[in-house]
Length: 330
Image: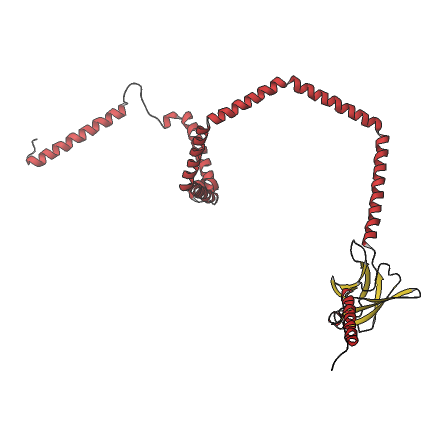
């Protein structure tokens, strides 16, 4: 079968038109190769919204605007959403017109609801307008500028009402500055002397760096020796022993503990002291009862007693000799 030239041109033109139409739809955000669900949304005003505008859900493009139609007091907007994403849209979701960015333009954002069932194809979504971000910033900027103006006016009023005080304050600051300058000038020599002394001190430190390092080394050595000798442990042990001794004394153990805690010992010592005092008083009153002495030698009784002892010894010796010899002379 042979095709004439006109038929070939017609087929080619149809293909070009179909591809162009598909390309236009694709550039408008609608992919004809994917199946979509269509929903209707009613708004009071859609200024800035255009056909083929994006439809986003959580920042992801899920469809586009198909048609915008004015119906009395409201505007009907038909949107197409890919069926894959349509299953994720609950029945109580909201379609919100919002700014597409700082460069202008509007888009529709799907705010997912919390219903368990998803919206059906051809259903109507509830729509609302979101305040324009630029307009909101402009409004807030206006409020900020107005607040700044009020602040500046308040500062001006404060300055005007206290101009005399501010002038006096400036004068006082100038006087204070002059006084400080005079003090610094009058004390310049003292300051220089102090700086010289500081320089001398630093020089002395630098000259004695070796000694200082030696002292620090000795201190470090002492601390090391103490650590190696377990000085802290020994001191802790000694303190523990002292605490144990004090505890034993407090409990009345040992001689010192009994001395401190036994009342009987205290009473006995007290009675001994009292007896000693009485003895001393009696000794003073009757010394002859306790001490016997003579200024001119021995007494007669002592001499007689001594002679009797000598006679007894002589008799004993004579008896021993008679016993040995066997004869006793008369």
